[in-house]
Amino acid sequence: MLYRLIWLLAIVFCSLQCSAPKTPPNILLILTDDQGYGDLGFHGNTAIHTPQLDQFFHQGSTIPQFYVNPVCAPTRASILTGRYYQRAGVHGVTRGRERMRIEEQTMADLFREAGYQTAVFGKWHNGANYPYHPLARGFDHFTGFSSGHYSSYFDTTIEKDGEAFLAEGYLPDVITQEALDFMAKKKAQNKPFFCFVTFQTPHTPLHVPDRYFDPYIAQGLDAFTAAIYGMCENIDDNLGRMMALLDTLQLKENTIVIFLTDNGPLTLRYNDGLKGRKGTVDEGGVRVPFGIQWPGTIPGGQSIEGAWAHIDLLPTLLDLTRVHVNPKNTLDGTSFAPRLMQKSQVLDRTLFDNWGGRVRLQRDSLLLTQNGLYDLKNDRGQTHNLEDQLPKLKAQLQSEFHAWEATLPEKPKILPFQLGLPSQPKVVLEASQALLQPPFEFRKDRRHTGIAYHSLHGWAHDWIDFWTDTQAYAVWNVESLETTTYEVYLEYGLDTENKNVKLVLNAKDQQLNIAQLPVFEPLALPDYDRVPRTQEAPAMQWKLHKVGELKFPKGNYPLSLQTTVMGGTQSIELKSIRLHPKK
Image (tube, rainbow, N blue to C red; front, side, top):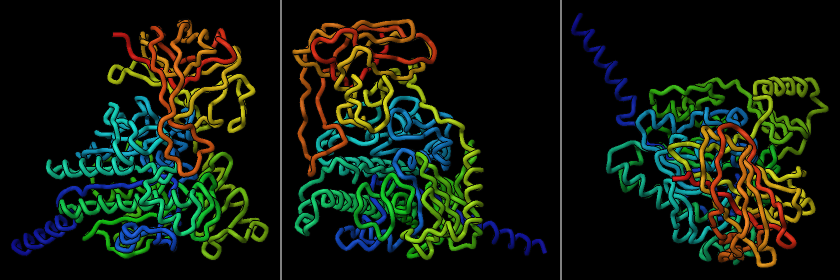
């Protein structure tokens, strides 16, 4: 009897051991920027060449109905936290609205706690300065840029672990090489890794090497689409490089690889019949490609039914890796690991979003937006509005939506720049992060107000220009954790006509008067645009000049820069204010 009991216990123990991973599986999470559902051959696009992606999707598991947000920063916050971006404090893509609350725990935080080496390569877009910077959010390494997009993709300077880094060559290729080096190093050290590769392409500017661009022009495509498809093909090649390395290092069977994109396409192009594009809550704006591989563990060649979303990634990866960590914040997502393992799973959930008044509620195949009610199972193109036929159902779904909204923070706020941090003392106040005064309607031409952005909208890398009124000024909200004195540098341009300009920087009851600035005409860097940019600022070289020292009192207050005297017709062109603690 005792022998039989021991034998049974041995079988149970063996089965438990065999069902668990021998070592923690690595994670390679790949996210692209503005690549739509139709921007790969797997979804029926016959004009684009993406053989690596097509093979990845054929051999792995796919989720045809996978959803994100209409724009990039909210999607990234939800991927990282497993929570709706509104809870994470993110409510925009610029002016500080992209910063993620420091109380949020990220995917990198959790996997580092579980013993993983963590790194992010590429675009961040959830806060540039500490404590919002990726190196303060659970990542051991970061090579890339923190803003919403970058001005140039060739031979440009980005960041590597807090220091300037010259990315020689084409930026997505450099980002890929950094990720390859990281994974190879962790393999040699026998350490599990979480590698987050966040390509900035195919987001504009339309920079792409000839070998990717020319074949699409030869097909007869317009230059804009040719550049987009060329960038997607480059992503495809770089995916192939990463998969080949996993093969070479014999890591394929112990690495979970995920590919998805952050929102729909910027332009109306082939999108497999889906309505809408980036910025909309229709299917074409938020439904994206999603594929996952873990050979030998997750069955390949399967298509997972149901509506799943970015908030589901974190709980799914926690399930798959079986790491013993517990998120401190309540997750909104649901793990789809059981579905991947072909186990039954009852899914009774509803997905919500409200992007600038654009409402989205999805339950199973029913979709409610501010424009109507649709049955996606029979009408994936949203051509038949059912709200008049189903008024009671519409009212019920609206009631559910309002109940969900009631669980969100009442009013989003812009999180301040933090000063006085002993571990990361330098702070960069980008001009594109300033709130320009007097207030004016967003995305409207404000050049007549006496201060504006060079490229109208003030996206990342834009600068303050058309500063012609001494009553107009720029403001950054700051929070100084302790009284700190900083050396102040301006990154600016100033022509001879306006050389006698005078400014004042105000920090609560402290002032720094600025005068006698050296003249410097900003220099345009090489232009690689395939199509002239219309909304984004060009890449420029600026003057960096120390203008003095300023004491920042402890507390939370607006930091303002005003022009007291116009040297001629206008003030300086301002790219940034840089604060270095006084030694």
